[in-house]
Length: 255
Length: 291
Image (cartoon, rainbow over all chains, first blue to last red; front, side, top):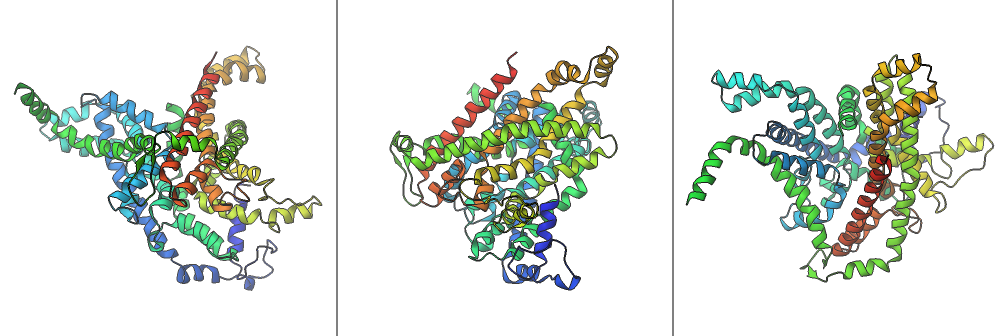
């Protein structure tokens, strides 16, 4: 039940015709062909979309993790007056469906010329309330003593943070990296409204376009695109699913 | 004079912490807080994408009141939620109970059931669109079993079909939340109850259910938010058709904003969307936390 749709899609992607009405099991291996994948890679902008998605989700996840780690640390240690107040804001933001922001985001980004620009995708995805929440909660559990000892031994605050606190936060950072990579890769509505130029689209929007582009849908190509477009997150999940599940558990356990 | 000195003193004292906190705070304020506040202002204007916005007060909301397609999409969204939220809340609970009973390789099965959630919804939707074709594989199976075939994406069935896809996709995801809750129940309590002769039903109603209730609230709230975000699924499979029968609120907002270029009107619809979702979530909290 879980895998059937994907296996079926894989089967269809190997048939060099437009039809979906085929027997599930191929009669012979010679019936199968990679022509749809070739078409996707050479006749469409698909490779470019993949690259755009990689750039966007890679950069956004990276920036997001740094920003969340630093802010989470300040909030956990209550280094600034009003830290708890800021944390309350973060909690409130976690409850706001972010789709509500797309209209003003779009208007604002087009005012500063960031529509049809990958930066206009990266920046809005670079801060995530859940990330701040996760980092703060995790750093709360790390004893202060190590950093304080390092400070007494003459290291700077910067060193204490990145040499002492950061290594101890790595499990939570892993959780954040994996969940954010998957989330930014799968984001659809933001790239849909921010990007209209074909060569700048991300893979999710590109595949959605393929589904409506050709009047007589070429299902083989479409299925090939769906699978290839999802492949990076699938690979990340297969390798790092422990981190992803941990993130879910934390979300469910703490709230 | 004294005040300025104070500010400088604060700045020196907190220089490093400000440096750490500012990127995160700025990003959150610019890309979350400000857009949420701004959408309320935009909803009071007429704002064609090209050209200046014009303040028109509550006019957008008045127009919404007599907009039949808006109400259609609002009702559709509520229909999606009414189907998806109870199904997900219940089925993922059951799935979690099953997963809990699995002692060997539970981590593996967890990963398997979460898997659909990880696949880009665009891909999932595209694939299901193929599965749901009039002469697609599901109908082929129905035919093979001697059952009548179904037009899954017709006006009559499309909402149920799309809801099914979302339920299929998210049930494993939410079962992980429940599992996390189960793991917080100390096994000693359950063992003690067993020793005292409590049967499975009693153990469930008196121990498991009360301890799980916060998570039931969480799952029902998150799945409500999820069902309100059915946008991508609708956009990829039907674009709201046939004849607006599957159009969800977010799809309507998108159409008004980016097809008709009426940003102010779209913002008003978005505010209504937000308010309804907020009310629903508050209601869910209230009902479940009442004792």
